[in-house]
Image (cartoon, rainbow, N blue to C red; front, side, top):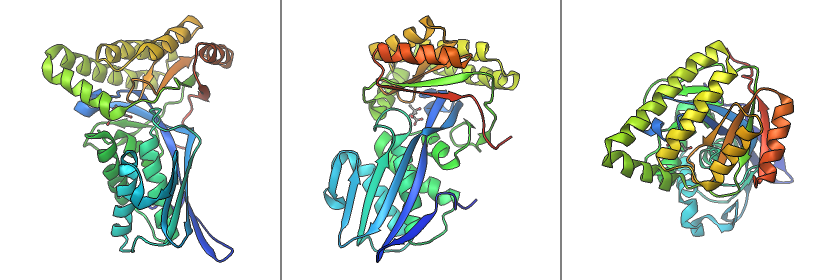
Length: 325
Ligand code: MEV
């Protein structure tokens, strides 16, 4: 499959300009356990959008989150992005020169919504568009994965897959992706704790636990079982059962040490105000949490309660798969 979707290629005055876009992602279930070969369910998150714009320039510069300078001087935290830019230019046999790369995001960085994978995805697409070259899904995945390995250490590949595919996925590391429908009569609230998560750190902490005690291996296996139970619930379209599964998943994620007091407080607040289930999403230890609610009225009430309880932002989306299955 070739990507033409995000192709925007224009001439601005005499300068060449190209744009690449990416959506973020929400992991509904299976974060962390997916690293150990268990399944996960993730959906694209349209409220989180990354746009990379490339313009002709007399040097190679990068403007991204808090950095504005030469690509060569980019800080360590941007190493994944810097590397993916270099590798993409290598891939298309172009010298890395005379480009200004500007990345804008509707979401803050490190909130567990896939911003590192999304930034890489948008940027690779923009570079291909700049040179008017066709980009296969396979090459895009390979390039985004290079960045993810640097940013996250040993990623499952889930974040890269979801931002590249832009489809709800049932995902098992190393296996073919399975697209599915997550439509059901319910709403999902996403809340930003306002705290930066650190996926690399969270993944390495879980690894230490997993290697040290069999009980953690059992928690990981239980998380996998919950994902498979949820898959049946999506066929049944039963939000109440899905909420219960989310609550159980949150207990195991807490037992693995990736929740924290801020997330716990927002989970508690959601349930108190009528959510069917609530849990962290993504790497945890900050970042975002999600809550499932039955209807728009409860969604509004829970969103307001989350903001009062300290959430920096909330987004509400209908549980609706668009254009597939
Ligand atoms: C991070 O968005 C998801 C994790 O499961 C890590 C991974 O899948 O590589 C925590």
